[in-house]
Image (cartoon, rainbow over all chains, first blue to last red; front, side, top):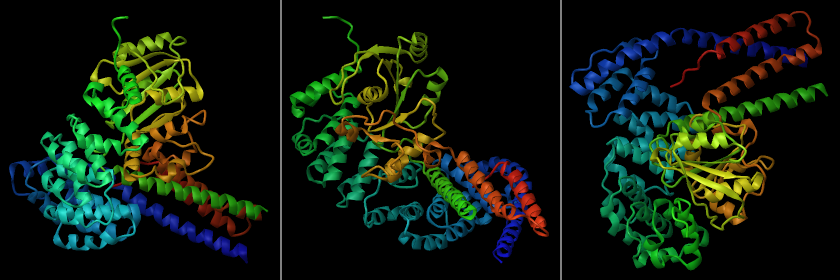
Length: 310
Length: 278
């Protein structure tokens, strides 16, 4: 009896795998042809974007999965260009139905797969309907999905950046801030760092600090000193690191007070960072104890060569 | 007994397949994040510690990592390999600098410390030392300047984007390294936080890095994970027919077995072709 069941199961699996093999084989027949059609679509699309021409029908619309191919091409082109008119790209995506294609993949996947498809959707100009549907993924179980949905909505509506980030119940991680900064560098988000540093919310302050550090905004020195003195522990620690990365003087009293509140491990880590940036012991002055001064000089010596023997 | 063994093997193969799928999904998600590629992960620095005399090709491979906040610390005995040392000095425009141990870890004999004069090769540090085992790792940790240390065994190499993925994983878990970095007690940790290591007094195990292939998903490129997943899939499919042979194939069971074998063969052919994804 068990044998019969087992054989039936194997027979059923045989049928399922055979169907899968057949479907995959059928699809693979057209991959090469579709790749060629996509290659031939790149130049007309770029002409449309740069010369502001009317978008004609592209060869890739004849592929087997035009929505998927259009999404690939639009994401690739969009990630490489800066400051072009997004309207032709939006029309192109709408005509091929790419956003609905990706939305279907989002609906029928879970966890990291869903986050992956949402991230791909964030690279494309999308419609209001897609944005409304994405709102419900802000409450997903997976933090990756929640962040990917947030990134998509913030990219589609940059004016909501402050309110959405401020409403987050948890801190943004370094990787998440990096993704927001990437969208910012593509010109999809505003670069106003002052409102961010002056905001009462820690997430907004952290985002502002990331922008200041990335673009080496030296004029933010005053705000950085204020954050070091008044913000919460994590933000003030990060502000101290950003001040150091800008190679600004560290002789102010707020810096000494903040450094005094560090644990031994944090101090060591910070001083090692300073040595890598090239601060001399003289520039640090009274910030270092005698032992730290000696260790710091030894670390600096590892970058130099003694030319004259004493 | 046979049945139990079969269930055990099938179960293990299934678990391995699940892990491989999970790792592949995770790698795909990390590939979709652009932060590491553009140098936007602030203060997530990785120092790669490699000991043993490397070939020039291996140095080139280790230096070819695109992640910006990264350095390579090479340690070997220059007296036993003078030709290699001269080759590295010429190739990377190295200059000998002073070496003074910081005092954070136990000092060891270091003959020379070399850094590059060229900005292009600033990420390379060569240590000429007799130290071996734990001492060698401690020396390299003393010289390293980044917050995370990645010891790499001599017989292993980095796969593409391994360092970017590692940096992203570290950046996604701000307060502690992710569990997978040391999740199996019998596997050695992959990555060490420098300050925690110093607080522990240095490397407590003679060799850092290593670990079972299956769980090192960040040092396996995506296509290798796919191959692993396909290989496990095929093994599972083959294992399914084992009980038929164990019990004695008879009558029409041959038809089922032959059909099954044909399907497995077709699948193998298909998996050998390129797997195109979005």
